[in-house]
Amino acid sequence: MNPSLRMLWALPYLPWPTTSGGKLRQYHLLRELAARGHRITLLAQSKIPLDDAARHALEPLLDRLIVLPRRPLKSFTTMAAALLSPLPLLATVNGYAAPLQRRFEQLLDERWDIVQIEHSYALQPYARSLEQRRQPFLLSEHNIESQLGNITYQRLPAALRPLARLDNWRYRRWEQRALHQAQQVIAVTEADATAFRALTPRPVRVAINGVDVQAAAHVRPDVHTQRILYVGNFEYAPNVDAVEWAVQEIMPRVWATRPKALLCVCGYALPERWRRHMEDPRIEWLGYVKRLDHVQAQASAFLAPLRDGGGSKLKVLEAMAAGLPLVSTAQGVSGLNVREGIHYRRGDHAAALAQALIELLQAPEQAVVLGEAGRRYVREQHDWRIAADQLEAAYREHTACA
Image 1 (cartoon, rainbow, N blue to C red):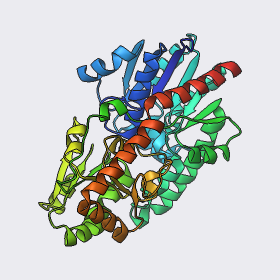
Image 2 (image 1 turned 60 degrees about the horizontal axis):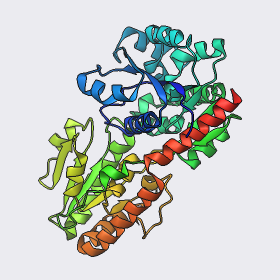
Image 3 (image 1 turned 90 degrees about the horizontal axis):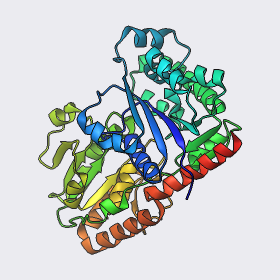
């Protein structure tokens, strides 16, 4: 058994409710590490107030839960920093938080085996204190944020793109500084780790994304409903693009052959404009659902028409863990060791994705075989216990070098 470690984790959000892939990852890793006897203090800056449900979910896992409010996006400090700061917008939104910096400095007076900062964009309030105290820390990066910034900027009006290019340059510079300051970097895929190694001499280790395979084991999709599922957090630009592409180009091709097929869209922050402007009885705009397993059990397939993004997709892993037959672009399965035709059906343009869906809807027996192969893959390679093992290995290396 590994010795118990005292850890300070700093996050720019509350990991409950699990409305995004990042929150889902944090919650399950905290749960796994707590079960192994590690003592964790969680310092979170959150735009969502701490309520009883979050306390009930998180406090049993932690020594201490410390939550400070994040200032409103339209505050004077944020607006001024966005205009005048040399830092990128995402870092200013989460930075220049004096109360958070003071609380972190107080916590550094204590002895920690591990100090872990989640996301380079959240580092600003801690960077000076860490440097002055010569405090080693791990930086956990879920994506290559500078690349994701490019995706978001592409959706901006042309008049704003020069500012977007400037902000992306600032993020690349900030990202490199953050990677250099950390003693060790944690990535979620080997591809991301390779990219980070090109930017920093610091050790980069991988702790994969996972899924609660035991919780999903009971789900049995209904391959006869012709319901096609998509799940995402719609504060994230690649998820918005995926749904709009599905509605505008993929599903019309499916409906031409399978007119009774349904598209079911679930997820946090679902845009109201979709309900208003894409009203169609064949589309179910469910938004955020507390029991995703109920929706999965009523679906026949999962569609992942992602054209941009990074890391590995927790929504895809959750769908596979539930036995849902997967139809995906190459981007949708990035970071996963899945085989086309064995674990999923692939298409990288609208016609190919639609054809793959039609074939699965027409052959439910093949859909079941595909779904169960995906479930076995996730059970063997993406249980959260594997991710926690990898994180503990990084911790052992970190403490040995400290």
